[in-house]
Image (cartoon, rainbow, N blue to C red):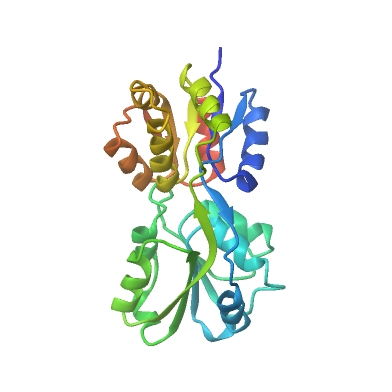
Length: 254
């Protein structure tokens, strides 16, 4: 019997993948491990979006950053290049009508390494010297991308577009976790932060064997950085797919 598939993305992003998983004949289980919400004060976000034409490059760190920004945009300005770290963000852009034929979109060349480090390798950093660059991200995030762009001579601004948080361990969530850990599942995990949050939630169950059972589950992850996080947390059954839902789905069929 095929194992159910646990999808740990934020709920608003999980449903399209869940439908695709179901189309494969697998049973999807939605377990959002990050709650995504708008920031309280969006004045700074709106201000920079009103002046996008001044930037040579706008980098979105995640699909959530894309969606949060485009909630305030009617169209993408001409001649402003875009940088994204993975195929999920490229797909989010496409949902908002921004594709390669309408804008210059930079992303890592190898989909197995969809992260800031490999995005930087795909950019012409010399061409960004003394030019304005905007990084759209969550309320907290890694400084690697903006710091590296500044080191290359770009004039970098960052703006928070959304807030993310691990859900609270409610009695309902605790019961769901215990049920999932009782049997083997395939777990699609697309965020290192979500994976660390999952381990913390399972530790909060107060069951000494819970984390050990979690570590025995199969994880399917799109990024090498998530795989590295998983190994550091004691997971041994890992499948690294590369970026994009089609690769995640292919791993379920292998």
